[in-house]
Amino acid sequence: MAFRGNLRDFTITQLLNVINLAGKTGTLVVEGPSETAKVSFREGKLAYAQIGEEDSRLASVLYKANKLTAGQYRAIQQRAAHLSDKELGLMLVNAGYLTQDEILLHLQQHFTDVVRRLFTWVEGFFHFENDMLPPDDRITVRVNLENLIMEGSRQLRELEQLQDEIPSLDMALKFTDRPGANLRNLNLSVEEWRVISYVNPRNTLRQIAAATRMNDLEIRRIVYGLLQAGLVELVRPEHMPAPAVRMFPTDNKEEQKSLVNRLINRIRSL
Amino acid sequence: MQTVKIVVTGPFNAGKTEFIRSVSEIDVVSTERKLSSSAEKTVKESTTVAMDFGRITVDDDLVLYLFGTPGQRRFDFMWEILSEGMLGFVVMVDSTRPETFREARSILETFRAYAPTPYVVAANKQDKKDAWDVEDMRHALRLDSKVKILPCVATDRETVKKVLLELLYSILAEMEGKGK
Image (cartoon, chains in turn cyan, yellow):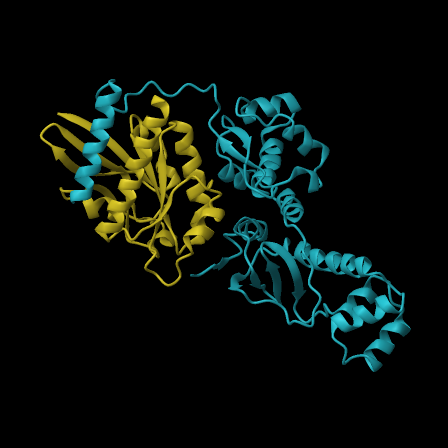
């Protein structure tokens, strides 16, 4: 089945959200106006990323991070170009230049920086290649996407777009019971923590905005980020009375059930 | 004669009119007008401006009405009127047009705010090769795992029946849950 579309309709943040929640494995290919990015995921976590012809190999990443001198980088290019990233990484660890954790940290930073750059892309087409991963000789990482999603969401500033996402401030929030959603691993701003502290099905967004002294745009922006990261969901406030409109022609509960069962039987018989 | 109603909503060109037409025993009373916007005309020639109306007679004493809402925001003043007293609602989403998912989610939230009635999401046009996978749509639409999202082809009566039945099962389950 297709997982493809246009960035004008579906932002990178929203794509990361789908990949995160669905725990997808594969490569997101984004064809921008001037270059193509390939971002790989394993079980919903960022594994690898590359934009255009930019070098995402280990030696290049470490050189750009000032962990290799120009001389060392040149020497690797000349004498160890045949080594895979994994072999080079092992060599650097064994030689005491870097620890394994340092290597992974720099790769993580590089790959997340690639994704951050994609946040600025508003034109282009995307598709997701299931199960396509970078070559085996590359070192992959496992980066939770929630923080990146929050970062991307913070860049959505247009009120009109936010109103589409969150049409009513009379709804409330509750924490999702999705396994894996963990507040402790997230880098939240002070404002986001303040909103989090009021998340409760009894509090409407309007009330939270009043309590935290935020305007409509500010509360929508923060709630949008929390929604995108899959931490909360919108619910009808607990105290909001249901409209006093008759759904059934009878108030008798048994007759109501009988009526629904008659509807079911009729639809089945169509 | 007792009457009950189910509302079928969703973005422009999601397939609401077709959905109702597939199961209605009467020709759908459709308030369609020629489209004025050239952008919308590239998708279809006419659209629902007030509502679609279909009917299923259950027995001598009970009739189910199906109301389809207009899909464009400029007609959203009709939504609340149509949602009054509904048993539940179906949100139709075109599986081949991810550009409409945001709008679908917004419509869903709006209807949830109108009434706390059960609802299901129908992932329409699943027969098309560009259709998104139903579970990917669940995440894109930010639907809780408990919300039913059902594959659908609005012109195929069997899948339409399945969507309506799942909505009715949800209505029944909620009534039984409240009764406990």
